[in-house]
Amino acid sequence: MTAKRTPILICLLLTPMVCRAAATGSKPLTTTEYRAELDRLSLATQQLNSSGAPTPDALHHLPQSWHVSVSEKEFDILTEGLQRDVRRYEEDKSAANAIAIRRRLDGMRSEIDGFEKPPADVSASRAELNSILARREFRDVSGPTWLDRLKRRLLDFILRILSHVIQAASIPTVGKTFVYVLMGIALAALLYIAYRSIFRSQELDEVVPRDLPVSAKEWAIWLAEARAAAARSEWRDAIHLAYWAGISFLERQGFWKPDRARTPREYLRLLSAESGHHETLTSLTKTFELAWYAKRDVGEQAFSETLSELEKLGCR
Figure 1: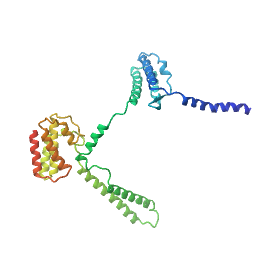
Figure 2: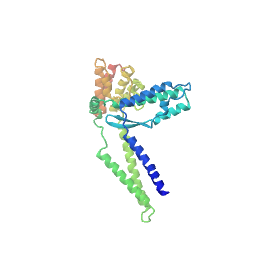
Figure 3: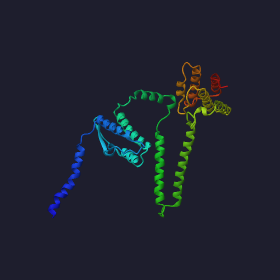
Figure 4: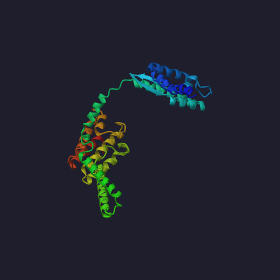
C-alpha cells in the first residue's frame, strides 16, 4: 500500500517545480507585442457602456502578469489593478467604471512608452543650478559644521548618561541629589540649544514672506515699516523692507506673476533690460544684497539712496 502511494506523492511534489520551470522559461513579450496586447484590450473596452452589455472575454481571461523585455531588461507587469477595475464594472455596469478601465489601459501604455524614452539631458539645468548656488546669497549655506556635530554628540552623551542614572536611581549608593544635578545640566543644555536656534533663525530671515506673495502686502505698508525701522536706526532692516516695497510695487504693476519662491536675482532677470526700471531695480538689488546678505555696515545715507531709487520706480 505504501509502495503504491510513493509515486503519487513524488508526482505531487514535482508538479509545482515543473510548472515554475515552464513559467520561468517562457519567452518574454517584446514591447511591440505588449503594446499590441494593450491595444487589443483597449479595442475590447469600446463595447463597455452603461447598457448592461456583457464583459468581453478578453477582459475575463487576463493573466496574472505580463512578462515583458525592455532594453535588455525583463519585468513582470501585474494586472491586479486592471482585474479589480473589471470586477468593479461587472458589479456596477456604469459609464464611469467603463472609463476607469480605459484609463487604466491608457496609463499602462503611457508607462511603457515613457520607459523606452532616452533619459533627458539635464546638463543645461545642472549648469544653471550650479550658477544659482554660486551666487552671493547662497555663499553661507552649508551642511552641519564640526561645531554643530560636536554639540549634537555632547547632547547625546548627556542624554545617555542621564538615562543610565535614572535606571540606576533605585540603587541606594546613587543619591537623589546627583540625579537632579544631571537632570538640571541636561535641561540647561536643551534650553541653550533651543535659545540659540530660535534667535539664529530670526537672523536668517527668509528672502520672501513665508505664507503669501510679496504683493499680498501693499508696497506702501512695506515702505511704512521701512521708515519705522529707520526711525529706530535699524538700517539693515530698513533697507530690507524698502527693497520688498519696490518688489511689491512692480509685482502689482504686472511685471511678473507672483511667486514667493523667487530670489532677488530672479526678480531682476524677469525685468527686461529694455525696461526703464531695470537699472533702478539693479541698484536696489545690489544695495539690498550688500546690506542683508553680506551684512555690510550701512547707515542713513544708504537708506536715503534706497528711498531715492524707490521714488524713481514710482513709490511716492
